[in-house]
Amino acid sequence: MKKTILTGLRPTGNLHLGHLFGAGQNYVKLQDDYDFYLEIADVQALTDNFNNPEKVRENIKEITMDLLAIGIDPKKVNIFIQSKIPEIAELTVFYSNLVTVSRLQRNPTVKSEIAQKKELFGNDGESITYGFLGYPVSQAADITIFNGELVPVGDDQLPLLEQCREIVRKFNSIYGDTLKEPEAYLSKTTRIKGLDGNDKMGKSLGNAIYLVDSEETIANKIMKAVTDPNKIKKDDPANPDVCMVYYYHKLVNDEDSLKVVCSECKKGARGCVLCKKELINKMNEFLKPIKERRKQYEDNPELVKEILENGTKIAKDKAKEQMKKVRKAMKIDY
Ligand code: ATP
Ligand code: MG
Image (cartoon, rainbow, N blue to C red):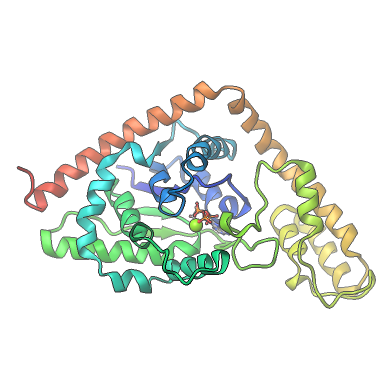
């Protein structure tokens, strides 16, 4: 029997290069060999976008088209909408008894997201809701309701997976062996940096290159990308390892050209403007087939709707089955 994959994305914006290189390429790679559930996590997105439901609604379609554009085959992967499976919310309630508030507050991912919100909105953290603090619990329900064994993610998700494993162990120790402990599946590049040099490219950080960005937007973004601050003049030698332009060359350029970029940069034989222009061309070339595939779905919104409906139906059946086991184990199968 095939092992099960559960992974997900929050519909808060289009897919960016972080998604693609951090997790998305693994989705495509693994889709042949696993029973694959890909969640569009609208309930999780609402935890910090509850006052902007239109944004979440709109991005469900957007992100589904992005996923199809990178090569997810809907015949192999069940793409589904989280809120259409209320059993996940039910399981979240049961799990919430198994996690302490202080453990959630100490979760490194939650901690850094709270810090980021404080920085962005200038508040003192007073506005952090119960729902937001509890999203790792709901994520544990997402994974385990599908019996997820493998979870392809970027490394920012590792503390959330650890939290999920703890909940599984606690559940099994109290109610008997019912749930499986999931494992993370990481890519070679576990975290893609942002245009501003930030450690993580993220939707909420405003430092991303989106797969749907127009050629003009890509050019504007790359022209503003952070380069070696010690390089002042065009022929100053520089350190490619601190340059975001070289960093993205590494993602989309071929080995031979990369060697040339690196050695010319170190010798001071290449200016940043030329280097950025080369990257703009390479990036647009790289994104072209993705955009072409996406266009087929943009022209056929009924098909996208149908893909989501089919995926959701299959996922719902699987979730219902698991909830029967959970209720039985918890002695609430009245
Ligand atoms: P948000 O800012 O709304 O949290 P995000 O850009 O972090 O958005 P998510 O939808 O939270 O995107 O993440 C979906 C998946 O993509 C997760 O597996 C996450 O680890 C991965 N991912 C997101 N950004 C990066 C990145 N910069 N590098 C590697 N993986 C990433
Ligand atoms: Mg995120």
